[in-house]
Structure formats: C-alpha cells, structure tokens
Image 1: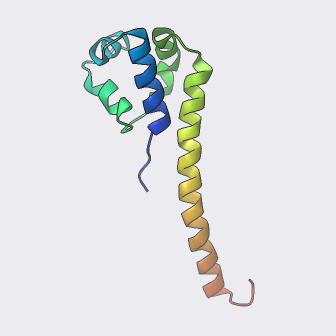
Image 2: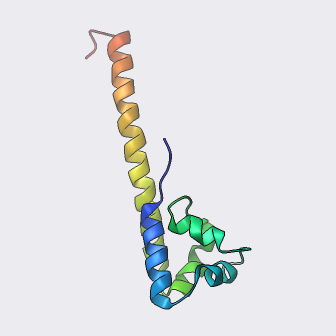
Length: 102
C-alpha cells in the first residue's frame, strides 16, 4: 500500500505561501538543490526528513510540534489503512486454518 503525506503537504504549502517564500527559496534555505524537493512534499509524494523539522519550523514560522503532528497524522492514517486490511487478511487466514477458533 502506497503512503500518502497529505497532511504535511498541506501544512508546508499553506505556511510557505503565508510567509511569502517560493518553493525554490525554501529548497535553498533547507540546502536542497532545487524546488523539486519542495514540490514533491507539497504534492504529498514524500515527507520532510526528520533532521529538517527544526529548520523548516523556523523558516515557516511555526512550531516543531505543528510539523511533527502533521507527520504523525500522516503516519497514523497510513498504519490504520495498512493494519485494517491486514487484520481482515489475518482473520480470514485464521478462520481458514482454524475454523473452530472463531
């Protein structure tokens, strides 16, 4: 199952626009080569590396916790999707293997 990073994507884009920084400038401030890195984050393709949370918070004028919360929510939603489908598969497997157990 593919991960999606929509919460951190929205936070970064909204905050970046609010503080008036371009994708190119944000990439430079975070020491990345070009705007593609920020573009990928804002499209939900990838998340922020943990080592960049503090720098990003300073640039976007928000708290570390706000960024961490968005990242944690993305991860939590992913785990819920993955474990929900796995739990169904596990129950089916146990039911098939041990029909009298459930």
